[in-house]
Amino acid sequence: MASRSNSSMRIFLLFCFFTQWIHNAIVRAQQVPCYFIFGDSLADPGNNNNLITQAKANYQPYGVDFAAGPTGRFTNNRTLPDVIGQLLGFPEFIPPFANTAGKNITKGVNYASAVSGIRDETGKNQGDRVSLNKQLLNHLTTYFKIRQILGSGTATSQHFGKCIYVIITGNNDYINNYFMPNMYLTSRLYTPQQYADVLAAQYTAQLKVLYSLGARKVAVFGVGLIGSAPQMITRFGANSTNVSLTAQLFSNKLPGIVNNLNSLLPGAKFTFINVTGITITSPPAPGLNTTGTCCQLVQNLGTCVPGSTPCPNRSLYAFFDGFHPSDVVNAAFGQRAYTKQLATDASPYSIQQLSQLP
Figure 1 (tube, one colour):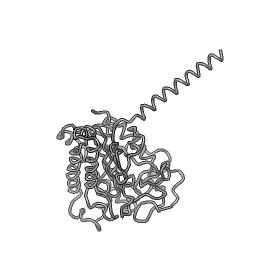
Figure 2 (cartoon, rainbow, N blue to C red):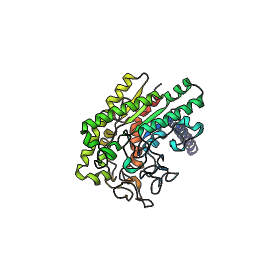
Figure 3 (cartoon, helix red, strand yellow):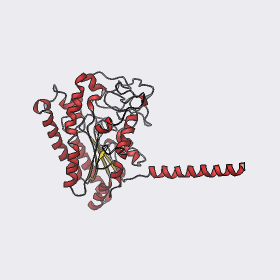
Figure 4 (cartoon, rainbow, N blue to C red):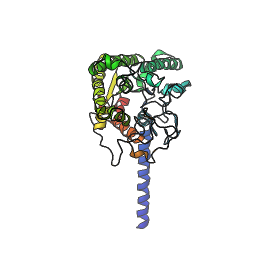
């Protein structure tokens, strides 16, 4: 009787192992042939490393939990696009434009640059950066290289049409532009609503440029509650809530922009990722510190002091530095954007649904 019981148990365990193996294989299967990323420091994997700028993170304690160490990512481990790439089944992280070469570019490129924005002047207070307009020009370069590799315009269009595109921008157009009146004229030229309108018009034009370069499956991330970042609370105190409210005037326009683009552009499959909605409907895990930072900050800059020792348990902090989330937050946000846990997380598609569309 015992022998039969043990044999049945072994068969059951083997079945469970095989089922889990099949599940993991399905999860790991790459769902799209290519993945392109645009944006700011929430997505930058190291494009700013060789620029003359204060906005770089290629030093410790950044990357303390990342296998490759400090790479230029503004967090302890993975960025939000890194997490999404893993969920899409990519075996490796998408490389920065600054480091791409050869046929690997057909799998994707990350153009994101810390402190950049929709407007060209955004972020100049910290030095060099690659604005969204320049990122689109860099993608044009990639487009022609891939066309040369694939050999025809038709093959190139078909290839780009299957890719996933992620864009995370607009944050610095407020943090490092509108709310720096001593450095920028925008807050004197425009009311908050006028500025939101101007940003929306420019961003719409930029998204149309991306479409003209073959993009069809595009996830547009909204601007989150940026006034809640520790460094913004230090800068503005009780008025930091107003920063978030002002930025939402722009972010709230994005669902309409996405819907209009889908209606106007043949084959377009844009989707809006509701960063603010995900934040509001994601109660902090027990014990998660949502007001402090895991690393010691450079005064008035909000980035980590080079060589400083970070907190011992990064999973207990929502923010790694004064602006940027830790891996635990990026993982949670990435999952919500990918699967659309709530109907309000993404509209009209989750990133997973986007990847499955023809």
